[in-house]
Length: 83
Image 1 (spheres, rainbow, N blue to C red):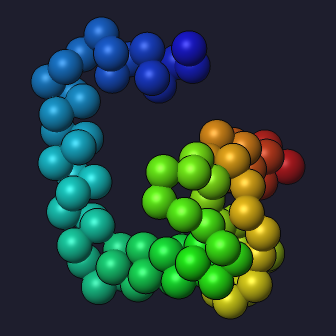
Image 2 (image 1 turned 90 degrees about the vertical axis):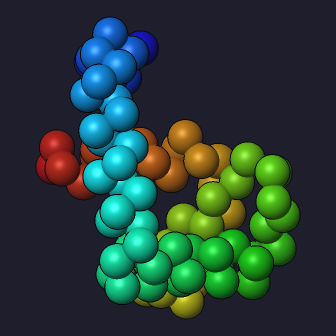
């Protein structure tokens, strides 16, 4: 388990605050646009609800990408930050 996941598991109050913040962000125009683009691409690529795959966008593109496991797709941001 990574440090961040461990922290939120050990601090339920902090986890609750984080989820509240995430929920608020998901309802902003920017958050909604990000969700819409991801869902649209996932459907275009043949992704199904519950298949465990995310639409991984190619760099700089909102309309092209590939299906990728959710965990791999979310780890990709870490590689960008470390470079």
